[in-house]
Each structure stands twice: as C-alpha cells, then as structure tokens.
Image (cartoon, rainbow, N blue to C red; front, side, top):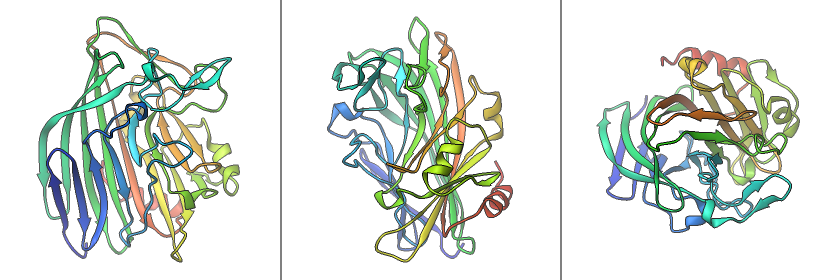
Length: 311
C-alpha cells in the first residue's frame, strides 16, 4: 500500500473513504428525497485506485439504481428495490404504495486503521404504510488496498431479523413469473460506458458482452466478474463479486443476476427462481466481497487475487 486510507464522516449524510487523492467510495445514508426510488443507503461513487469511476447513479432508464445497494425487489407484496413493480400478466407498473424504505438508525461500531476501515450499522426495513417489518445489522469493511495489483476490496454483510408477527416472503420478478429477471439482494449498477462489457466466471469468458452475461444469468459460482472500458480515458476496470464461504449454508441458495446490455448490472440474488420464507423472530445472514480493480482481468488473475484475500 503506497498511502494510508483516510476516512471522512459527514454526520447524518455520508462516509467517504480515500486513498491518496482518490475518493474510493462514499457510503450515503442520508435518505434520498424520492420515496418512489425506495429510500435506503447506498455506495456511490465507487472508484478504482487510479480514479476510474465504476458505479452509476440514477441512470435515466432506472432512476432507483444507485451504485451498490441492498435491495429486496419482492418482499411480501412490497418493493424495497424501488421504481416500478412487476405484476404477472400486467408487466411493470408504477405502484407507489408498494415501495418501502430502509431507515438508518445508527452506527454500532466505527473503526479506522491505516489500511482498513469498518463499521456496523443498524437499519429498519419499513413498508410503505409505516409498519416496521425487519431489523438489519449491516457491516461494511474497506481493506486490502494493493497498489501493485491495482485493486482494493469492499466487504458487505447483512443480518436481517423479521420483526413482524407473520412470515416475510422473499422473491423476485422471476418468482412472480418473469423469465430471467431474478434480481434482488445486493445489487451493483455500473456506469453507462460499461454497457456491453464482458462478464466472466471461474470457467472463463463465455462469450463477449451480453453473450457472457446470458450464459451466467441464473447460475451459481463462488464469484463473477465484470470488465468494462471507460469513456474519456484509455482504461479498463474490473469488478469481482464474491460469496463468503458460509453463504453456501445460508437460508436460501443464491444465483447470479447479470446483464451487460442494455444495462451493466450484477446482483447476488438470494431468491432468483424460488421464494423463501423468514419466520417471525428469525434471522438470516449473508456476506459478500466486491474487489475493485484497474485493468481488464481474466479468470486466472481473478482467482489468484481472491485466493490471496482472507475472509
């Protein structure tokens, strides 16, 4: 690491993490003004060590897409994803009364070291009518800043507890009847210039652009990577999305949601093909890693780098 990381906390609004003169990320927890976009915290901007931007914010096709954020597209009839809701036989419809929110309640821990930053946050998931449905403990850690490799890592954990007196049912547009649209869970929206980028998994590229994404849509693997080429600078960047080992024993099996066209996007979908139920008072947990790297990485380089990072 060529320089320590620095952290700036604008209380009530955001936390920014920088390496040298590059702002690597901002975690924004002040609610956005538009309730229809499902108010909730998000990470944006997200940048590589060289400063290349690798996240999109409120794109004109989906205003509710905001960098990297936790979502739940279909949750007991509510939409914690934001925007239009999918209704089988009717398609997508604007139904504001279905759109919920995630309220920031405070930070439990906040630790800054020279080469590592982490916090735990308490949140409440609130349905559109104001009822509190779930309590979340979220963990965010920035670590493994490696100037030689041109990469750094962000870990994101979630522990969610059902506070209702009835089960919570987690699904997706695919569980509701739309084929190959099983998006939900932790979701990344890439910048516009990543449209048409390559998606690859442990077995290598399965075709360029959307062809590779289509091969990996709805599949399972320890990791998936997305490589794009930037406008305005002669550079590529790669994002690697990885499951923690214990996710294989989580409440429900995860599948990848991945598109390169018409939009660049990846989600760790926890309910791609089938709904799952969280009983009253019960909790579930997942842990994820996102590696942000300069350059166009192949599968071998991704696998080697991931092996060098402890969980």
